[in-house]
Image (cartoon, rainbow, N blue to C red; front, side, top):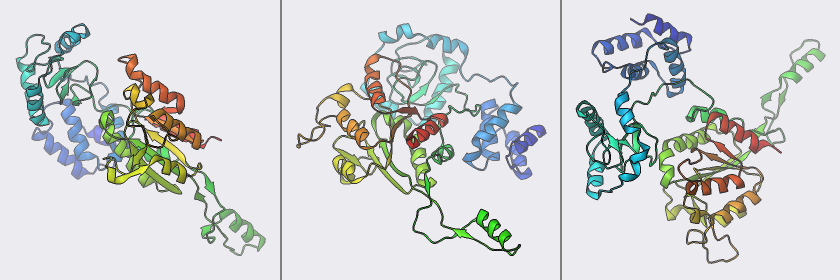
Length: 400
């Protein structure tokens, strides 16, 4: 069964052994795919792919072979039509503290099982409740709801509390605008290189051109030449937003941090964290513990302007946090910046090579939420956290 799929995977560069293939056949015979196409995809990926680095390659092969198979809807079109009711959302906004507490106690497995049961039971549209699949309300399934956790069904993401989206097709073509994983981060970051041979090291690197030249000049007698190794002279200061709305991108930012750490070709790398803006202090740990804080003024004074600075954040906060002189930005020294925007401008003025990488798109649910996004985009060149976006950002940092 599916022998040609095996050959498609191998032609695509995946080293699938016969033992792994037979394990897949046995798993299918036992029904471990759950009699669903999506379940079959996850079963194949779990048994046939040895490394996360090959997930994109597997997805391309999977789509190539099964391109004509219609995708089965986890959620019926009738239910999706019921949930597509933006006109009724504002009529349901009752917060239930007790229900929120109960929902918090539910495991993801329990919510998944409850959703299956509701979809078998539900025969009509519901809004504003806490039991059925609907809009708003305190139910753990539906869209635009107030539950602290759940599964989004239809609609648009708003509060980013859902742990998954029902009916979302996980496998897709690899494109340049896909968000990044660790491996793709590493590839993009390798663009950030400025080599110099003016390093005080012994000549240990094999010099091909001069070896050929000297060997020819000595009548064919091999004359091996060495040269000083070149080193990347780039110094990087990575500033990462942590907490609040950035929790939604925690996994992605963790992948970025790992990639930056693993690349290993920078002359120096400094990493600091902040919440919304680097006010009077930044932190050495994403938990933002006071014990790991560093005065921002000290950082600006001690890290030279040759550092390439990369801010990572969604640039979304209450406007007064960015432009108001409130307690986040106040410092006893009146000569220091008094708000978040002042500090950002200090960074811009100190470092000529600086960019902002944003994992979020510009907010589309109201001008209020766009204010800080647009204000920061006017201070720094802003790039999306995608393959193309990160590569463009690296080129901007190297521009003279």
